[in-house]
Length: 367
Image 1 (tube, rainbow, N blue to C red):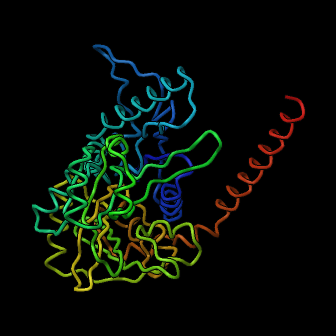
Image 2: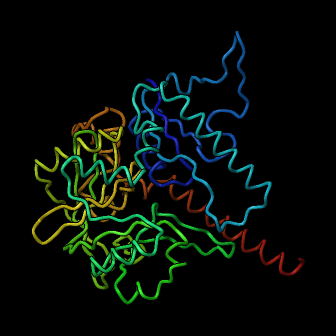
């Protein structure tokens, strides 16, 4: 049996679960580190008239490949020295080039690397979704204060969000994540022209929503879940990930006409798997917000285990389409969390944390 390739970063829960679940079902997998200097096969490549070491059997003999994560540039606030920063960027560029070079290797991809990168373009997403008859919010993308203020005045209240959901890690260890925020007239007046000009930002009409919807698109199949919040209400539901029992998930049927539009839209982006976020209005209308070709989905399995999203994804990976009979071959995410491999990882992490504390204490005493 040919092996299945998973490209990702060490410690990624989605990649680790899928690799474990496929292995338990008898499907050999190989994990390719997409964020390190030895990514993804070896650091030494050679090419001349007689030899081509730019290719590897890892790729040419694979049944399918899942590009879970490509390396991303380091955040602007991470503390890298000049040499370290240059080295890291070169390593990441190497990883991207080599993975893209092998797109013609495996016969099936989730998703082809180049297409996956292109599909992250939110400007393209909005225009393409609109062209497929999917409602999108009125949107302004600008760093010009006069355009921002005119849009805010016409809308009354708007939503501001970054081009990408970045997280920054500071030298102190603190992590900051950018979420979507509400901007009303009062908040807008507090922003100086210099503040607005500092960064290009997406500004959109505020949709009066009754719930958020996360959709998972696997080929021609769509699984949608209504997301509601308990207690304190956050405009960006993702803040609830950090609060226990904050988010509730409920399967939600997608109208056939909308399903056809979404699958056509996603296929036009060149990908076969993605998550998409929508705002659901009181009239039952779905308003498209954004698409993520590497979108998270295990949180659905955690909050709604009967969804069996992890098993569905594994089936899609190995079969190329959804096969309900194949789902039963794969253990659930809940089983993975109770497995020996997770317990061993937790113990290793605990020991690492203890050693880091001990090292810090030693440095304080002897530094």
